[in-house]
Length: 288
Image 1 (cartoon, rainbow, N blue to C red):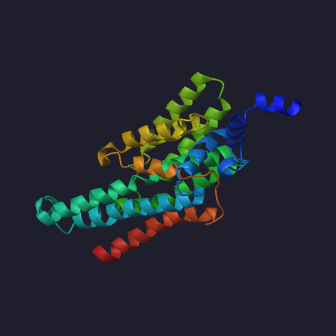
Image 2: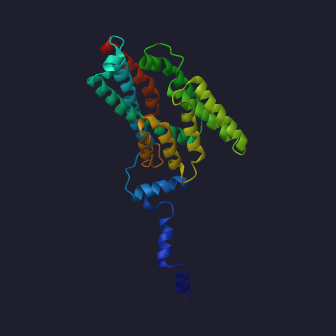
Image 3: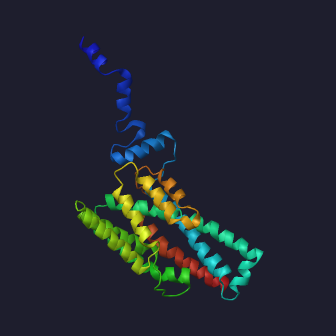
């Protein structure tokens, strides 16, 4: 009688549904936070490929290199080479073809920032050493500035524009302030405004839009609309490239919440100034 009463109280079909919603169903890891489980469950049901955080960084790094290569070799090297006249060449059929190639490559490069922004938020939330995290960003922002100026502008020092590591650093500091004043909405808004103004004042890559992108990803991290917010911001950020950054947000659907073990963390910090130095050297060899 007791068994039949329990079966009547919880039908088999309902029990099955309850079991499927528990952590571990569909291979959902037990450690995964609730907001990540929803995305992961959809990814498993729709058979998205699984990517770790470091895999995503490798993909974003590849697109970033494509973007910088277009600036260095196509824009500076071919379209704006000082040994030729820019306007007449741009008006020729060959010049227009190179402009189209440049546009395609720059659009591909727009996929990188949404991934880096998302992973910065993930790193901020899960790191146990925020001070070390911020120090690394600061050190490599400084180390990357001369390689960035050499590759992108052809000058040892170009104070009118700063590399994207400064944008990530400003956003990181803004998140630190927002976390400390989490219960004060006005305080969060003030620090967000300060972060956006700092990015614009320093003329950091992506500017205020980049800082706002990262802060909004953080604010909506526990909701089911984080990626929708990211998609909207990505489209706004890349309007000049037909909203190509939206494709970068689609890559985030493949993230299963694990950082991964390969490649090493230091590779990504070294790869940024390293590839810029390499591009600057190749430019000097090819177009000298």
